[in-house]
Amino acid sequence: MTKRHWTGSYGSIPAEIDADRFPSVSALLDDAMHRYADRPAFHSYGRTLTYADVDRLSTALAAYLQQVVGVRKGDRVAVMLPNVLAFPVAFVAVAKIGAIQVNVNPLYTARELEHQLNDAGVEVAVVCGGSMGTFAEVVGGTRVRTVLSVGRGDLGVVDAPAGTCDALPPGSIPLADAIAAGEALAFEPVALGGADLLLLQYTGGTTGLSKGAALSHRNLVANIEQFGAIVPAAREPGEEVVVTAIPMYHIFALTVNFLSYFAIGAQNWLIANPRDMDGFIDVLKAARPTVFVGVNTLYAGLAGHPRLTEIDWSRLKLSAGGGAAVIDVISSRWKAVTGNFIREGYGLSETSPVVSFNPQAIDSFTGTTGLPLPSTDVKLLDDQDNEVAIGSAGEICVKGPQVMGGYWQKPDANEAAFTADGYFRTGDVGVFDEAGFLRIVDRKKDMIIVSGFNVYPNEVEAVATGVPGVAECACIGVPDARTGEAVKLFVVLAQDATVTEEQLVAHCRESLAGYKVPKLIRFVDRLPKSTVGKILRRELSRTD
Image (tube, rainbow, N blue to C red; front, side, top):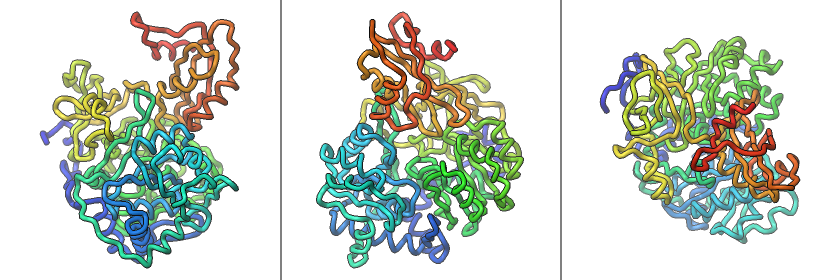
């Protein structure tokens, strides 16, 4: 890769990493499970799994999936779990057999879930009890033939409401039973290479329907190596303690919290419900973390909590922020208590996810997303695809071993997603300073980020327009002290129609995950539009 100006700020950070250090994520996981076999790997609700436990349980599950269910290399397996012990066990099992994991948000509505299962061609799913009602509602319209249910005592803690599992396929079985049966079966190792797909990470699209970013084993191995290179002081093998409150079905937590720290033998304390702030703080007190990773919303909630000072922060080496912009005042509050400022990064599902991060040598909050990672090239392009000068704004375009090969079965979207010379178009607008630090200034795609989760206006608008009496609508993101941004919906009613805010919210809740539901609704006479009829969302943001 051609040397770029930000490498002058690297100091001791290597400009390149070995993206082929491990031939696959499965090989990386196997190395960690053997190297750190007796060390604790995950803690959840009073139960601990060692690295050897994860190896044993995942191998048994892998054998069951192979021998009983018939899962083969390249098959898609949906995992619809919160942060419970079943998640890493399922992930490792899926990786072992060469299948492709499809991460699914357990809070998805029936509409969102059915689209994702069908788009990915999922035939096998691992589902938490609390999501069984929604799953049962859609499973008949999908190719899913086997469901492994995770409930209390099943390496999880969420029970299904009574009567919600009746419509599940005949092949459904508790995860614990599958693992028990698999212990008596032979697991057949699968030959894997870096180009083999590991993950379909779904991300919203301009059409309102999510697309699966197809991530390979090499993509994830590369990003693990890249992240480790930029924060070496928080990477002591066998000694780090991580607290994971961001859900692992989110690519940020999957790569950074889980995989990158599993690779070096860290202990990982899983938080299934970070909204239970007192319970969360009790875990932090017990864990005494060396590494904490969160989104701005999470930091804001903790920084303002009166019990934050009860926690021993003396071992904390790294506070990492991502998923949404970190606010300076929140970082200042966090540092006042923990002694650690928040290091912000930037990434996307399509880039495994980390593109840039503030290196450990930086000793204060920068207000930027840091430097591009080793082996990562970033161009800022104008509308004619010319690279802009340092200090000027342009669309962030990325090339590197962590960048996806494309979207799952979306050739038209793939053609539009990359430049002629192979750079991924992020749709975000950024500015480089002279030292190479990247600042995000706008989102070209009008995406809204609520608590670190992407919300695409077209999807919300398509649902809201389905309310009888709504002529047209448009939504934007507005600042929110708790969630970073909130969805604000502007609605134009048909002549003589009567629609209330309550009706709109109720309708949206039926088809959208909670974080996508409009928090603010304003009825207007007309929407600002261009001469060709395109809604001007930037004009909407100036109306208040």
